[in-house]
Length: 527
Image (tube, rainbow, N blue to C red; front, side, top):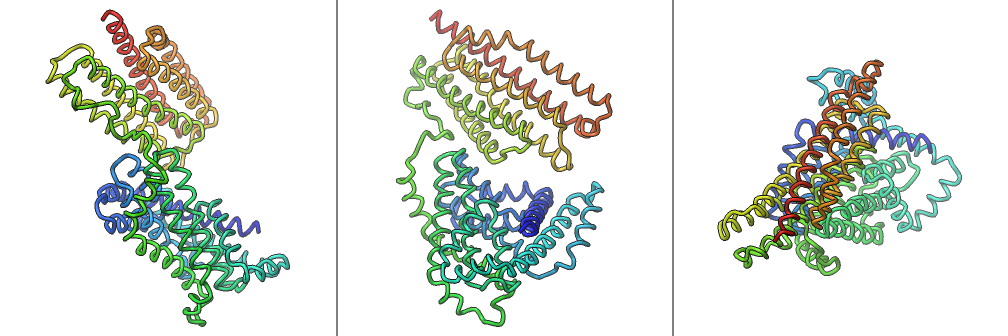
C-alpha cells in the first residue's frame, strides 16, 4: 500500500512538473487562447481541450475557466463546454504513459534533472524530468497493485466488487476527490487491470468514479468566486456523475464490445478514459445552454461584483445623487481590493498562492474601475468639474493600482517557485506579518471611506510612519540573515526585498485613500 501511495505521488508530481515546464513555454499564450474563446460552445470546448493537452493540467485549466466566467469574460454555457474540454485534454498524460515506456523512466529522470541545472534548458528539463517521474510512478503503481493481488483481504474485496459496480464507482469518486486527479485514479485502475488483479468492469468503474471525484475541487473553488462559476462547476459535476452512473449500470453490455485479446491492455484503459471524457463533452455540447438556464433557477443570481450596482445613467445629471452613487460604487471596488489583499496575506503565509481567486478579483477590480471612471467622465461633462468627483477619480484609480501591485506580489513569488527556491521559515513569517499589518490598515482606510469616519481615517494616516518603521526593521532583519550567510536568504534576497517594497507602495496608496476619505467627509460635513 505504501508503494502504491509512493507511485501515485510520483505520478502526480510528474504531471505537475510537465505542466510547469509546458506552462513556462506556452502558458500565457494558452491562457490568452482560453480568454478569446468566449463565443461558440464548440470553440470553447476545443480551446479547453487544446490548452489542457498542451499544459497537461486538466484541473488547472478547469479552474482557469471558472475564473474567466467569474470575471465576466465568458458566459456560463461556453464555460461549461470549456471545462469539459479541459478534462478531455488532461487525459493525454495517461495516453502517453500507456505506451509502456517504463524502461525509459530513470534515464529521463536523470537527463531532466541535469537539464534543469542550465538556464537555457531549464523548462525542457522540467518537462523531461516530469515525463520520467510519470512513467516511473505508473510503473510503481502497477507493481504495487499486482502485489496487492496476493492479499486475501484485497482479493475478497475485488470479488465482491464484481457484483457491486456502484460501490467501486463511489470508491473511485473518493479517490478522485482526495487526489483531485482523474489521471491518478485511472493509473490505479490501469494497474489493477494490467497486473491481472482486477477485471475490466471493475477497473472502468473505478476510473469513472475518479473522473467524477476530480470535479469536486473546482466546485469547492467556485464558492470563492461567484454564482456563475458555481453553475459551471456544478454542471460539470452533474454531467460527469450522470454519465458515470449510466455507464456503470450497463457496464457489462458496453464492455462486451471490447475484443477479449486487448481487454486487459493499458492502451484499452487509456482509450476508455479518453473516450468517456470525449463522449460526455460531445453529448453535452447541444444542451449546455439548457443546463445554464436550469442552473440559473437552482442557483439564483447574487450580487454581481463584475458590474456596477449603483451607477445609473438616468441620474447622472443630478449631481448630489450621482456623487453619492459613485461613492457607493467606489466602496464596492475597495471591497474587492481588500479581498485581494486578504488572499495575498494568506498565500504569503502558506507559500501557496490562489492564482485563480486573485486573477478573478483583479479582473473585477479592473472592470469596475473602467466603468466607474467612464461614469465620472459623463458626470463631469454634465455637471462640470468639482473637487468631490476629482477625489473619486483619484481614489478609484488608486484602488486599481493597489490591485496591480498585489498581482505583482503573486508574480514575484511565482518566479521564485520557477527557480526552485523558497523563503526561509523566518523570512516567510516576517513577510506574512507585514502583509497582515497591511490588511489591517487597508480595512481601516476602506471602512473610513465607506462610513466617512474622520477619526478612523486620521488614524490610518498617522500610522503610516509606524508601518514605514516596521518595513525598515524587516529589511534590517533580512540583511542580518545575509550577513550570517544563510543560503535560503541569499538565494531569495531580491524577491524578499521586492515584496517588502511592493507592500510599502501599497500602504502609501492606502494612506492616500485615507486622506481623501477624510477630505470628502469634512467637505460633506461643511455642506
